[in-house]
Amino acid sequence: MQGKKRAKRAKRPRAKTKHDFNAADFVNSVWGVMQKQAEENKTLRMLHARLEPEWNGVVEKIHEMLAAKGNEETTKRVEQICEYGSKAVRPLIDVLLKVTKQK
Image (cartoon, rainbow, N blue to C red):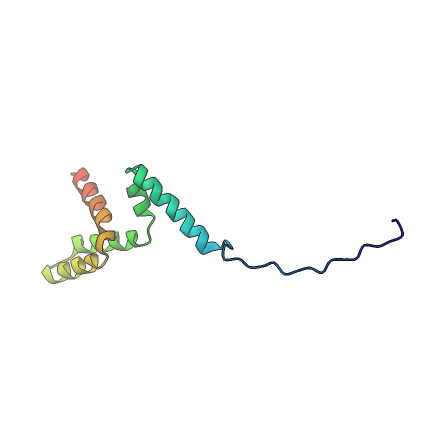
């Protein structure tokens, strides 16, 4: 067998499957784990809410609302906060708690 050379196998392209794992799959997987953790441990809900991209936008609008001069500007900021829907609840509570603890 020493004198014989092995025939090289032709490389077959890797078959694509519907289970290929990509970045979106990773994000969805992590998010699913985070949601499960939040259900099991209620104290993690606020932490996870802070990681959502909307958090900073809501907090910014809350600060603008608190600093607003006049009813028209205040109403405008309130409407902008309401556009976030239920995602605005936890940031509103967080700011309220921080304001009340400062006094």
